[in-house]
Length: 377
Image 1 (tube, rainbow, N blue to C red):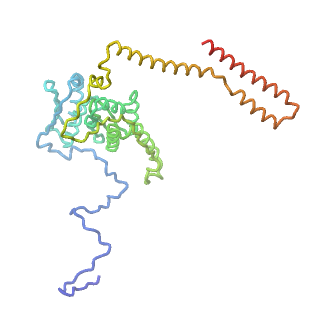
Image 2: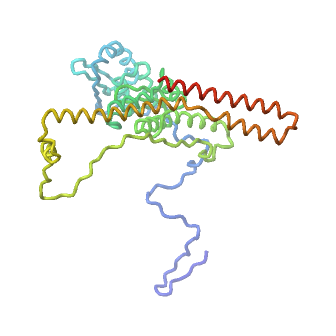
């Protein structure tokens, strides 16, 4: 490679390469040859080998959690199973019925340093009403858990219960569908939603639960999206493409709410409002105050009679509308006559004219019957 010297200092420098990569902040943050290897699963967790930690733990680590009173009887029955499962990993556990707490701690036989975190998750799941056989599965390295707190997402108690029921669905159908599509065990209990499964499934469950409780999207629509993603995963040609064009887009329909009656504030005035006239003041202005009781009652009776007469006339007019003779027959008859006059020969005039006379006589007969009924009334 050619070298050149600086004109001022005479220091020889090498020309910088055009393909020189940008400097990284981390000292050891360099691309590794196995970063892009498709045969390596970076999310895989290797099973712990006790030979990696022959000396055991130097200090004792412990975790405690409280449980509700209604779980006391069940935990007392299932505690031998929990104790034997934790004993295989060298973890001690204690059930305190007086304080209502569960405690797990490491021992000298503990080799896996992360097993105490798994044991902590175990007692948390037991306190959230998950059955002991299902909760013990959390001790496996491939199983993870997530406890979602939903009590603070909705303020109204009735609305909270309604949205929580959306997660369960009728006969737990929605919950079962979510478990199948996400591959997670889900339990809705009280103010929390407990889920067990892989990291990918737990991420989907948390998003669905939060969208349901915040009223962003109903779980049924999320189930439809997950079902379409399951079908798209089967096609290897679409594995590296964006799936947004295949997924349905749901529009939120806002339900009309009752408008709050807000009273407009009147402009501020330092003076008090004028005194409203009382009933006696109004009677004094109209002169009604000086009338005798007999005249007052007569005036009230007269007003009542006038209103009654108006109402009677209105009802009579409505009844008479039903007895007005129809004029449809005559109009239709002349329309038919004009149409036939243009299309038929003169030989048919006699037949047509007889039909017109029959229609006219029928209309006059109906009118005469209605008139007689009116006179009788």
